[in-house]
Image (cartoon, rainbow, N blue to C red; front, side, top):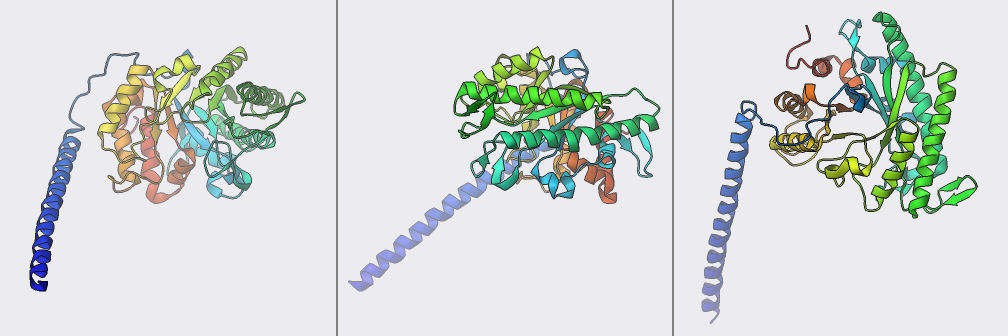
Length: 395
């Protein structure tokens, strides 16, 4: 009996191994076919012409719709700015973004014409975004963040513009500026007092009051800074909605905030992730300038992501976000340099290098590129792209 049982066990094991082998072979074969298809697509990606879909077309740069901005760089300033050199800003660091400075440290040309001061990490485990592992910021945090945007951001940027404009013989040059609104996190039930009333951001009306208070406070401080000459080379053109998707219940808040911002003469900016909730009806929600992220650098996707992003932006009348960090998360690509080159090539192939309003993630990394000899070529390529001549240098 024991011998018969052993024979059955061995036979079953052989059958199972054969089945597993066939299954594994099938998986490997499928993966091989998938890899082959990806390789074939990517091999012909650069050569195949692109036909834009029906739609509104890209959000055009340098028009009244964008307050004449074309290329807006994101500058991260938040709690990290107190301790991390990459997030500390002075006029010298800003100069690398205001102007293209060559390898011999000569100021050659203007670079970015717009600046979005942005941040989300705050002190003591709090956040300006609704992150699961962080607690929501309160009124005092919003005030401190606003002061940081103006003191470390706008004032130092203004000094850099003064210096660059003198060096380039353009004494009246001004750049565009957008300030970030902290997200009114619904988890914050003890925000603080506004006009003698304690706000609970779990309530829609209190969320609106908090944001409108922030905008009014920002404009009041901006007037003071402007009158004393601290920001007189900057044109404040709008405010940025920080959350990259429209959460349930946010649309009503955004519409109210948009109306308030418009009454003051400013625009509302937004940079959603790829096909985020709110992308297909962003104008109805109340946004004025939207540049969508392709997210190729961050997600498991192939080069076809750029075509999908271009079609979405073209169809819904959006601009495009150029994501050029010194890291990558997409497992299909070898390093950030490969990702960098793909974004550049996509900008040429799909026409958004010259046809769309562009935002650039992110200025902190661009300064590192500019000031590190082995990375200089990438700073130079950003300059070529901004000038619309990539893959060639400007004449």
